[in-house]
Length: 303
Image 1 (cartoon, rainbow, N blue to C red):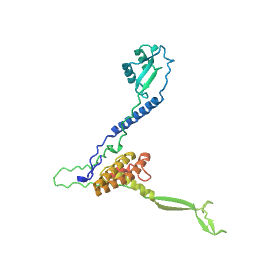
Image 2: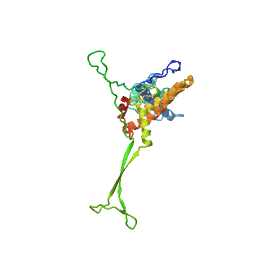
Image 3: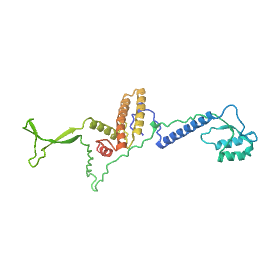
Image 4: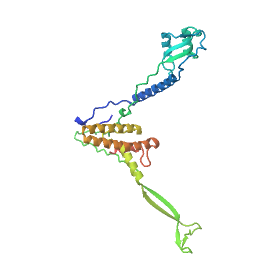
């Protein structure tokens, strides 16, 4: 749940947050009902229309009774629409024998008239309302020594966050050259052998845009949002849903003329966009090139 929203008359109405399991069930039901509808429409459209042939009807045709039709519809396949009329072969035995055969063993039914399927009205789940569990607050445990009440409490030092180095060293080995010879320069020789003398150089390269960009993504993921929400172990899709919610609240604040609220939600949406990029790396590789997921808790404890 999002916390620390602006209060008083500038606060937007509270939205009902829904558990992820409930939203997943809603999406599953939506998918199943639409797949069933499409299959039934395919059967309905391809059902024979126009003149009927009764050449396969031994003893002629007889209509299934309303009770028999209801029983057939209860056991029909999911791809089959509701039947409104069934003309069955009279030679197929009694109605009960016919129903037992076609519902358990299959086979020739006869002429079936279907009712046009009704398009389902259920909707996809709105994942912008998903309830995200907040990160549990970790507090330092302080044990007060026994004795006088006015005894001072010990100072608890926060752990220091050790950021990865922003520089890298590169060592290069090349042949040393000396003056002399026809060309003016000759390869230096090792006094102890015929191999050319080596020259070792070490350079320090500053990690450029790659490091700085990743550091911003890491900070956006590890720090709480403007509304005080920790991302915890949120994946990129979850973060993007939170971003959509922030942008929606931003619009509400804009309608109310709440400039402070608009600025806060704009800042949060921007942070979530950047944090989503680190979440991508976190779930694929455990982090980026410099910053790893294992550093998140250490960073938060040091704040």
